[in-house]
Length: 582
Image 1 (cartoon, helix red, strand yellow):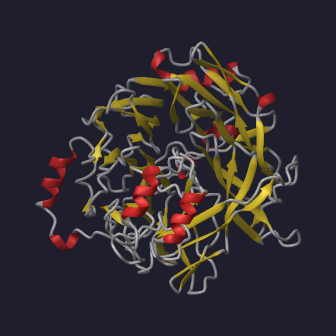
Image 2 (cartoon, one colour):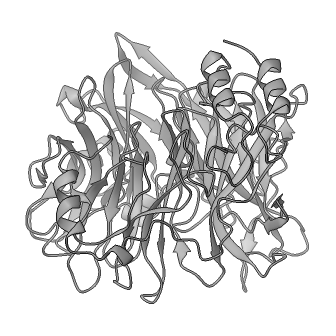
Image 3 (cartoon, one colour):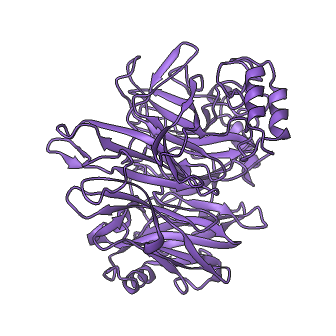
């Protein structure tokens, strides 16, 4: 059973406090979440020699337009099956949830994942949680926000046991606290916490958890980017294993040509990755007068286990006049924060979006490849980077269909054309983008999700706002895919270990009145039931185990129904055999 260490005792204690009626297993106000999916070819955005690829789309979480708002969604392939997470927030009258989702709304005997499994129900409390990371075993690391009246402010872990239906438990009894000490759970406002990064400690079941913190005066957490080793016991917040101080960040930025005044430095929330078995931390730095953590002038990349802080760290520096895009690193209050808008994989590749400083900016998505010497990353070069996409009125050189300027409102003001981006272990890239459909009307926008195939150098549009997803007589029209706000795409929205994306959409003029929800997109993978990149006997075994199952039956799994016709049989076997590649 997958668990978050000391979780079992907590479950027993909470179960004694909560009535059976409170243990709701699902939250689906529309009644159709996890029952709408479709398959179609991608639209090739550029590289004419590339062919479209098959895209399979599921809508596992769906809300009425007036229901709770959403925070950024994330996804991972766990035990060969898609597992995602998302949280909700809005007024105190609507539920605030932390939930897992899969692709189907039926209990699946093969895998046990069910759409909209609520793990924490905040109820009407002024609590709003924001996700950090799903780990390979399904454990979820997230930020438990505190309300204005106190009671909840920590980084937390919930179990990844999705092999059985999950009950919903009310906060603040769960999940497991990662940090301990005054100002974390007892005195909200003393220590500011953002969305955590997390990864396994190599060779251990312990977890590295990283967070950039600002202390309001209690002295409980060093100001800067901190890393704790979490072994299941709450770690003293005041003594992280590694710290990258604000003062050190200011000096590092100045040394690399980005001016930051003393006391004005701000660091973004970090990304963690192992590169050649060396643990790395990545975070952005800038001056508060030039965008702060939301618009870093450079990224700092360092092997943190060397325990020498900024010594030996390398930088990725934005072009003169440009800034990178990230999110709010720290803050206070009851609202959610945006997720990570840049990413790094185990090859040391970094993806990030740059923004020009013009009044109507241009946005450029870059891929940086590292120089590795002696088992350490020693440099990144702006000369060798690859521009994956761009949009806007200046320096828009790629024919990717992303036109600009992107202006909304009255008077019109610019919004991000591209915000969050993720890169997986294969070097493939996922992001979402918004563009102007009518030069004469700055408020006429469209948006889409994109997938960059590194092997072919090809950019695919995999889902577009206003696309309709239809199954079994039910149709949902996808609304605007946001580029700004807590529901925008962020780095964990692309699975590290598969070509699978998850992202949110806002209400549109839908056929049935408008809905908001979460979309899961799998690119390619025809015949690959476990998303491991090949089609072999294990995939054949999974298909045969589900043979003859129809939509609505417990053995039916839309991840195995390759043509999504509602039945697993000969046509799906034909797809698998035609893609056989052990």
